[in-house]
Length: 414
Image (cartoon, rainbow, N blue to C red):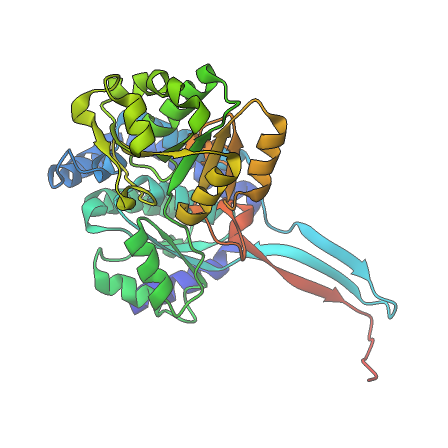
């Protein structure tokens, strides 16, 4: 593995010499190759799927389909069409002594990516890293190993066909030892980004010797305010919960204002149609009893709140006020995505000002927290940290900067 790190580091320097338009041409070639190699990729993916229980919440994340591959190729073309993040002048000035200073955007160098059963991540990471001039070292999980190997082999073939150093994308073995090697690769990995569940993220943060950008687990809330619109709320809550339950922006807890509990059965109608299991507190349980399938309605426990379910399961918490809703989110949220359903502009402003999360919505579902949906082309992850990038990380978020100084023989006297 040390050899792979050396190869990636060396290859990252060669990326600086590739013109932006040629980088875009390569990305378009990879997007075309996805369709041409669809059968091979899906065959590899079917081997991975055969080893996983279809009832596993990760099954949906693992699964590739012709439509999903088509969407991935579309996202890659979108990335190719975006302006290059490199060389942007972020700050410029001339000092009194005549020195001319520019702060310009540059790549990190080599980005290490540790991820679980999501083979689409390999495509997203490569497209964003290549466009931004970064090499990438990928470490996927065992569940998606056949898919990842087919994907990286296809990408490397396109690179080779176009005279590009294939070392700019490397795939490590799907072992715990490989993760440990990456986290210790000081001098080779410039930054490591974990993308997965709480256990993976905690392990990377606690054990890394290289810099880490933390992408957090998504414990997501939606607050239905006393001034919420019932039709909007029903649509928003259902979409946030059921669009794709295994993704990090999926709803985990509905917070209901106690004055609107009579509307809870109506809000829950589409949830029942999707067989969503609900853990309700006492007030919400009473409001739903007799109006929601008995086998899907359970009483909440303390563990029901602050849990990322990643399945057709959610909790409901009743609160007496907006402040109580914000307090509940502060105690149980993960800083990922939160939303409020309200027609009260003051309540909306207070919610967005006080809720501490990377993405805060008003009358729209948290399912929009996604790099492609934000117009970023794709994403390398959703950062929940405050130091550095926050929210969907795309091209600009995986660059750093350096100062370029030009003089004419000036010397420092003191």
